[in-house]
Length: 219
Image (cartoon, rainbow, N blue to C red):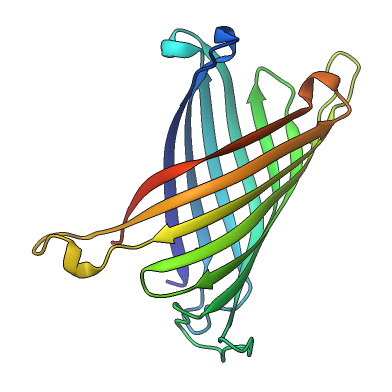
């Protein structure tokens, strides 16, 4: 079937020394179905996704928020060689020296407690593949969100998060042989987040960075 199914699971724990009450534990998941013809991996590929999010106070003592995100969108990657010449259509252009990517989607969020919201998400990215083991990418997540009216007010937010990622893929010779089916990568990420809102309490800036260890499996 011309469909690709992908899933993401994530757990995050935040603690703040100055304001301990601001800490939280978050659990996130996403299931995505994307159409692929199998003949050209640079084609426009529509997708549907669903992502639940649960947020708790520190130690899972009390649930703070629950989100259900439903999205419809489209994705595309364009592959280029070292001279920025476009690669010809092919079923697999993995390993191209340069890749430009775009994801755009319309998202409907059901939130408990209210209000619900509608958002437009655009995620452009550029990736430089240096070698089979090393790659560098810069992605920017842009979100415009419209909230339903709450207590007579309508909140509107802009969110921007540029992310710089340096990724290392260990050579196969480093990995155990036999039944091993993993595809581990090690990421070093730096990011900056800024949110502007017509709601004064919803404006913030945040910086972050650090090594991230990821592992994937193919079936």
